[in-house]
Structure formats: C-alpha cells, structure tokens
Image (tube, rainbow, N blue to C red; front, top):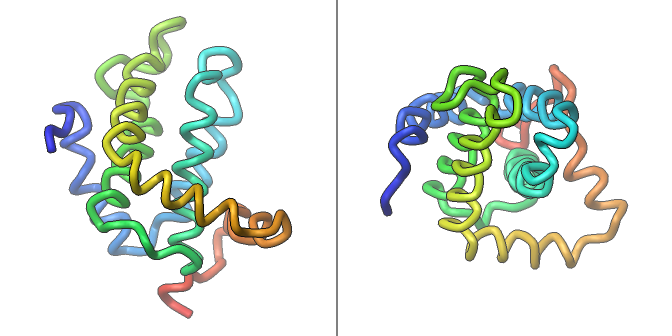
Length: 147
C-alpha cells in the first residue's frame, strides 16, 4: 500500500490515540470542524460522516469487522483533517481543504471494501440503533473497550 507522504506522519499519532483511548476527543473535534466550513467542506462531509460513523461503531464495540490497518488509516486521515498545519493550511481560502479532501479520498478509495462492509452492516440497523451507535460521546463516557 502506497500511503501518501503527508498522511504517513499521522500514523504513529493515530496509533497512540487509539492505544490511549482518546478516540472520542478526536471525533468531537472533527465534528466541530466538520460542521463549519460551509461550501469548502461540502465535498468532505459525506466522507467525514462515513469515517466518523465507522469509528463510533468500533469505539462502542458494535462493529469490529474492520482491520487494524484500515482503522489506523481512518484515524490518521481524521487527524490530518483536524490539523490546521498540514500540506496546505486550512486558513487559505478556497484551497485550504483541498489536501484534506485528497487525503480523505485516498482513505475512502484505499479502504473501499472495508467501508462497503461497514455500510452493509449499517444498512441492517434500525434508525434507533444507529442513533445510539453514531451519537457523539460525552467527554466522560467510557468506551466499550473499558466497560
């Protein structure tokens, strides 16, 4: 697998974040950043929602059929999206999110099979189940790993 150079440096922090149980904080921050941005984020929102949903389902212990490498790549991609000082700084109007879009597109394209499997699993859930599974965690909510 040929990981983009600008994403590669986020793999180790992603590994540490997962090991230390800090995924909820990342997802809350990604949600805050993803809810702003208007038209600049338009093309990213669908990918962000899919990746966040996968992470939330994994974190809650509801969906574990994702490989460690795919999960690590997804978390690294979300860290990259969150970083204001990536290859093209987000504050550059009009172009600041282009590199974020490229990285997230790479994650989605590379792990398409895993994401398709997650979407198939998700399609078998009721709206009520999904509301619980994909609800953003509170700061003090324990993960399924620690229950």
